[in-house]
Image (cartoon, rainbow, N blue to C red; front, side, top):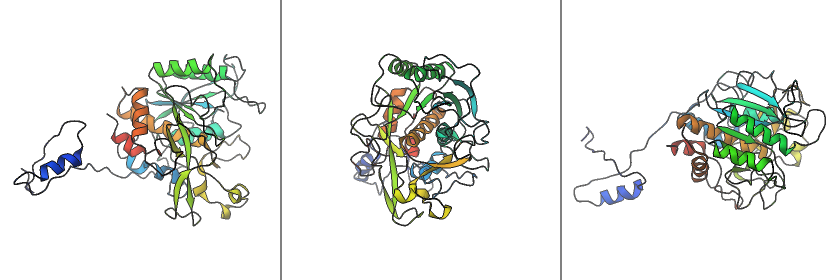
Amino acid sequence: MNPQGAVTYAIPSGSNMQQTAGVLRGLPGVINAGPVIVRHVLVTPNDPLFSNVNQWDMFAIGMPAAWGISEGITTVRIAVIDTGYDTFNTDLNGKVDGSIVYDKGDGTPHVGASIEDVSGHGTDISGIAAADTNNSTDVAGTGWNVHLLEARVFPNTNNSGAATQDIAAGINWAVANGAQVINLSLGGGTPDNTYEEPAVAAAIAAGVVVVAASGNDGRNTVDYPAADPGVIAVGASAYCDSVQNTPGSGFEYVASYSNYGSQLSVVAPGGDPDSTQTGCTTQACIDFLQWIENLDSTKGPFTETVGLFAGTSQASPHVAGAVALMFSIDPSLTPAQALSIIKASADPIGDPHQGSGRLDVFNALSQTP
C-alpha cells in the first residue's frame, strides 16, 4: 500500500482496464478502483513553421505527444520512391543515406543521372516523412530522427510517368539497402502482376512495411500498388475551418478526391484546397489549414524550400513516418503487425470513406509492443 492508501495490481495482458476496475469497485472494502494512466511529455520542436496552423497536420495526428514516446532513431530508414529530392535543402541533405535513379523504363539503374528533384513532389514527400527536425529550420517531419533512402523513378526530361519496372527496381534496391519502410506516393488503376506486385510482395516478405497512396480520383476503389496485398493503403483527410487559419473552428473529413473502398487502410492529412485557394496569388489569402505545408525543391518550378501541396501523396508519408517511429520502438515489428496497429489505433472522424479512421501516431506508438 502506498502513502495514498492504494495498492497497484497487474492484470492479464489484453484485459479491459475499465471493466476490471468496475469489478474491483464492487468488492467489499474497496472504496475506489481505476486504471493507472501513463502520461507523456509534449514535445515541441524549434522548427519555425511548426505550429497548429502551418503544420496543422502534425497536430491532427498527435505528433507532439507521439514524440514524447519516441523521436525515432537514425538507423531506421524510410525509402522514398518518387521524383528524387533536393540535395540543397538543409532539412534533407543530412538525412539521406543513399540514392539511386531508375528512370529508363527498363528497371536498370541510370548511371550518372542526377537524383535532383525538378518537380518538388519527392522533396515534399521526404519532408513529411522525415525532414530534419528541431534544427531551427523550416518544418518538422513525422519521423524526426529517422533517415531516408531516395530512388528517383520519374524521368526529369519529360512529363511521362514512372514505369512499373523502374518502381519495382527501386523497391528491390530499397530492401537491399536496409529500408524498414517504403513510401509509394504514386499509383494507377491497372495492376502490374509482372514487376511491381512481386517486388511489393518480396519487400513485405523481407519484413519491410510498404505504404502507398490510395489515389486522387474520388473513386470507390484503391489504386495500385496501394491495393496490393499487405500494403498500408492511405487516403487523404482534410480540415474544414469556418474561420480562415483558425484551428478548432471546423471539422475533419475525407477529401472528395481521395480514393476509398474496402482496401483502404486509413486516412491521414492530405489537405483539400477550395477554388479560392487554388486561385490564391498572395500570402494574405492563403488558408494553411486547407493545404499541407512542407518542403519543396529549389530545383523545382517554384524554386522554393517550402511549399503548399495537397493529395493522397501527402497523406501517405505521414503513415510511413509513423511506422518508422514504431520500428524505432520495436525493431522486430512485422508488416502485418504494423498494418494491424495503424488500423486499430486510428481515430474515427465520422466519414464513411475513412477506412479504419484517421492516423493517430500517439495511439499507434502506445500500442506498439
